[in-house]
Amino acid sequence: MGAIRLRTDVSYVLRGVAVVIAAAGLASCSTGVSTPPEETITYSAAYVSYDSPESLTADAALVVEGRVVRSEVREIPLESHPDGTGPRSNPALGATSETVAMPPLVYTVATVKIQRVIRGDAEVGAALEVKQLGGTLDGRSAVLPGAATLATGSTYVLYLGPGGVGPSSLLNQDQAAYIEVTPGEFAPAVQGDAVAREVATLLSSDR
Image 1: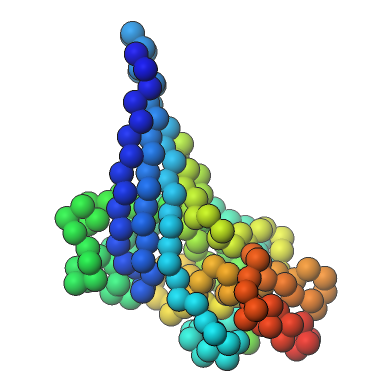
Image 2: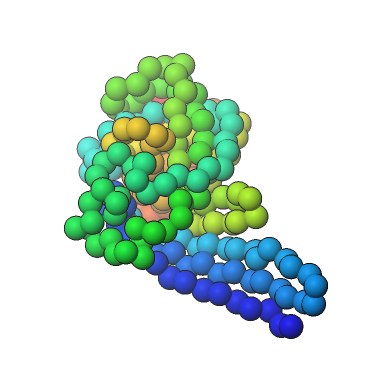
């Protein structure tokens, strides 16, 4: 028999971020053989964008410089988000019966050892978990195109949203993560806009 391709699109709101999920599964069938379907999920997220370094900093609950010491991929259920914006905890944000029944989201969680606190309440030397949509777990791959990648062994300055139970999150993908390219010199972790480039210059001159 031929391949069967399954696709579903689901949208919901999480911490003010509109997310659309496109999941495509490919299952092959043949006589007497059962092959588990492979699944690829693409997250498409619309984040808040900031018009100045000052507005980015003002909106961050925590700004830290730290080194990524390890990372792992996890599934995090919607109901575990602590800020009341998951569809299970706040259906008024547009959740439907379909979104409430969604499986947990796939995240890559980086553990960052804090080296400097620029804003907020944190301790130098403490370990901080930062989650990002995407990763590969149990044969299921999830990607967020254009997302910043926090590489193990690299040092970053991170602009993070409100904390709570579970890992923290970047404010957005193109203005909230800056990698140290040489000692004391930072660049946007992904290709950023003029604001991200200005922030990188300010971080570099601040050392």
